[in-house]
Length: 223
Length: 236
Image (cartoon, rainbow over the protein chains, first blue to last red):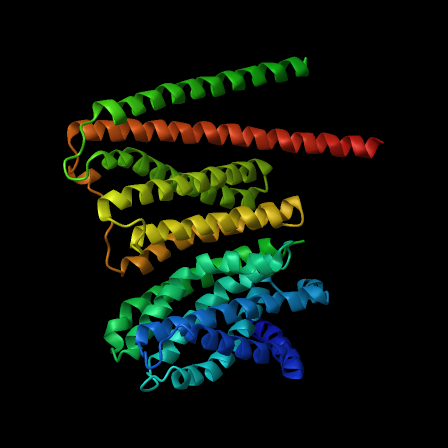
């Protein structure tokens, strides 16, 4: 068991090291998410300040940035032939999945740490609700759980840039809905009790797909 | 000798398929008669309510089709028998078409019944997301770079997609609803309506089975031809 953890961390560490050297993914994702917030905000009337509308804008931005980041994760591996190297590693395929999933999750969390405060300021919300990090974490786990699987799949298809969102968005829709609704509620000043059922939906999604995805992952990357 | 046996089994298969097609045809005609002539017009919703007898059987069969996809996908990944892949993909195609028809029939019915073509109501939204999931299923198998890869990817999406449906439903049920809850099993239908619905469900289920068999055997033939072509290429 201890061996499995260190193998997983080795894969995570490999991704973090290569990201630290280029800083490609995090920079482009933050810029992309911010741009979406700005572009979608054009639809707002001046002075219009609505919690649920702001929540939709935030999650549209984070979802699209997530799709972009998730597809990058395996495009990098594929283009430089690293996927073969990874598959030759003497580790179980589910460890490979967990490693890639965790590194994707860490990148997305870094992006969110930057985006969330900026979002609060740009859309002029009254304060930073303490529930927001929890919502973001649960949603990010769900995104990464199915996203890793579909990213590995999309990278091997002919229309890979299109395939990723086509696969990811409908499957991840429960998480997107729950994240938008609960963020809207906490931005309007609701307490933990009001968002409990939404958090439950995200938790259920996370648990189900964290269990199933590693099992089917080996069928996805098999050559 | 073997060739003769093969022909014999082909003939037998053809007889079963023709029998099923005939039965589907007769039941479908009977269902149309019941829907348009026999069953009385519903009081509050008027003639548009007759769409119900198409809407429910189509929806039921779409779900059946996706359940078949789910089971066949698991079997394919475990056994690696092309047979399950052919069944799963054919069933998904029919399910996608049926879901499209459910959505179209639903919007036509919505306009007179609720006054809108579309609302973001739980069932409508779930059905639309279901449609997108199986569209992605179809596309991923088409866009895969090789045959066996497409089969594996499709199977994975078939499993993940089906598991996703209850969660989508759960997420959306937390919204307020407009779609009626099923009144069918609570005695909300009169005898003649119940009969019409039942015959219509049987007719559409037979239609699903016929289409599934035809589509699967077409895929089987396509695979055989591909094999023959490969064999010829190797010989030349």
